[in-house]
Each structure stands twice: as structure tokens, then as C-alpha cells.
Length: 134
View 1 (tube, one colour):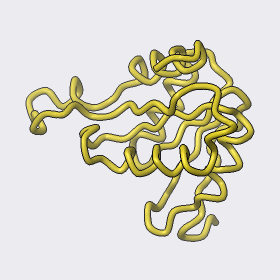
View 2 (cartoon, one colour; view 1 turned 90 degrees about the vertical axis):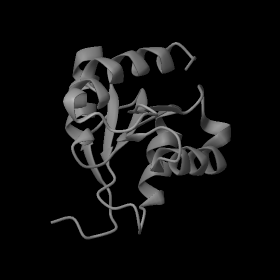
View 3 (cartoon, helix red, strand yellow; view 1 turned 90 degrees about the horizontal axis):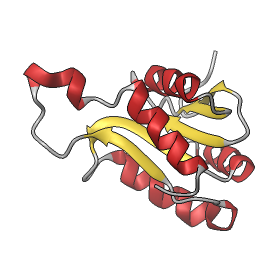
View 4 (cartoon, rainbow, N blue to C red; view 1 turned 135 degrees about the horizontal axis):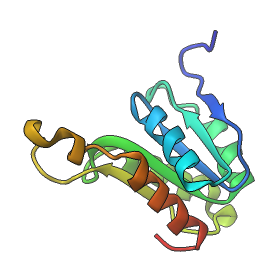
């Protein structure tokens, strides 16, 4: 049993760290498989408290970070995660931190599967980060 406030490494990897929570953990795992990239997938489990030690250790090991969440990009928690990774792991990063998020629109109930990040969007972000870009 993993205690509250402690992240869980869902998949070990060496090339890139994926930070996700909730349903997006499963999307991140599928995206990593689809991309064929050795990604470490971390289920944050809780945002407050946040297990920054696990995040730091993983990003320092991989040198890259992709954040996946359902919320819009603007004002989503991924922005806070990105800032924390930049502040704590800057000299270890080999590419910009990248976010794969919901779109900056009102939530479209009729098009929810187009709104939420899917495995293909995650795979595309992983490939881009591995190439050194966004």
C-alpha cells in the first residue's frame, strides 16, 4: 500500500519522465507504449502534499519531463509542476518541460474524447521531447 502524499512509479524508464494523475496515468502508459520510448511514468496520486522528491529523482535521472493532465493548459496544475521541475532540475534538463493537456476551451461534453489528451498526443509529445524540442 502506497501512503497518501507518496507518488507511485507505474513504469520504470530511463529516457523521459511522465508526470500524471487520475485517468491520465493510463493514457500516459499507453502513450509511452505507442511511442516505443523508455519512459518512466509516475502517478502523482496526490497534488497536496506533492511528492517532489520522487519527481526530482526521476527527472534528474531521465533529463526530460512530460506532464499530462485533463485540465486546460492555462491555469492547470501542470503549470505549477513545470515550474517546480524547472526550479529543482534545471541543470539536468536536456529539453524543455512539455505539457499535454485539455484544450483552452470550455469543456465540450459532446466532444469529450477529442478534448482529453489521448495516447497519440502523448506519444507525439514524447517523440518531440526526445528530439530536444517541444
